Image 1 (cartoon, chains in turn blue, brown, red, purple):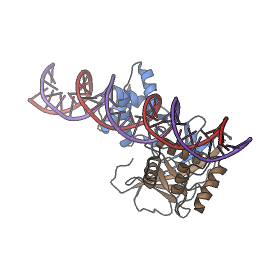
Image 2 (image 1 turned 135 degrees about the vertical axis):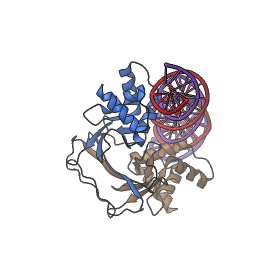
Image 3 (image 1 turned 120 degrees about the vertical axis):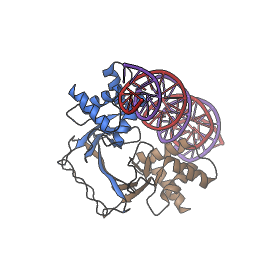
Image 4 (image 1 turned 135 degrees about the horizontal axis):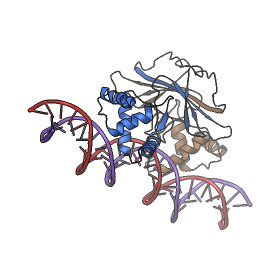
Amino acid sequence: MSKNLEFTDKLRSLGLRPTRQRLKICEVLFDRDKTFHFTINDLAKDISEQLNEKISLATVYNTVHAFKNKGYLKEISINSDKSYFDTNTTNHHHFFDQDTNELIDCTDEVIETPKIKKNILGKKINSVEVLIKVATDNQNQK
Amino acid sequence: MSKNLEFTDKLRSLGLRPTRQRLKICEVLFDRDKTFHFTINDLAKDISEQLNEKISLATVYNTVHAFKNKGYLKEISINSDKSYFDTNTTNHHHFFDQDTNELIDCTDEVIETPKIKKNILGKKINSVEVLIKVATDNQNQK
DNA sequence: TTATACATTATAATTATTCTAAACTATTGA
DNA sequence: TCAATAGTTTAGAATAATTATAATGTATAA
């Protein structure tokens, strides 16, 4: 149960009350070895199954957005169908497998962050993201 | 009116009948000097105004997707709000101004296409895109 | 010029997401 | 400890982008 205390602290430090739902979401998202990629729907389904009771979709949206705004989750833009989120908030890039709709993290050994030679607008750069879409050949590109 | 013939040929070569609506869409999209970025809604509004008559949203969707599938337009993933399209189908990258929701093309002088050192999935690479999100400082990141 | 296959359209349906307002709960401080 | 309150959850409604439908219209090939 020390994990639970850890999540409680985390939530408190974000100014969020540690509710049952939020602790469960933390557990599903952050109590794992590897980076986790998900859509809101995936996550809501996961949690409902694990809790053996419904969690409101609105709660999942609220919480995920709260985590995103606090920097504990990253949103990845792949297509306009739905939003993907990533528990790895460090600067990194992605492969997107169009056959399976799976998102895969890239390390520096796979691709390096491109250098921006000119910041044409002079505004603050919030993110630089590379997305590599792949599919088995003869597959229709999306 | 030679432009019109050009578009007629273009459409024919794609296996699409040159209808009034499609010719108008071609004119709006391709009869210009610079790359054009748009959302479906922008485009439909533009066209309705220029034609002084409604064009069905469904037609715009159909046509834009037909063009995209034939490689005459590129779809750019920015967020899940809506889809952006680009008349520049060459390999290039983008700045996205979060203050104005504007998309700006990057040339090689601004950023170079990152090298992929390992194709981790071994599948065909359909696209490699860099998206740089910018905003005036103290702006909330999206 | 007519048959046919393809297009357009208005509208309904679908899907992801956000909003709302009522019921609920964690926290604070008396 | 307990009530006040401020923040949360929830179901369901609302919204917005996109896709499907089915009837009507039109380009084209014979």
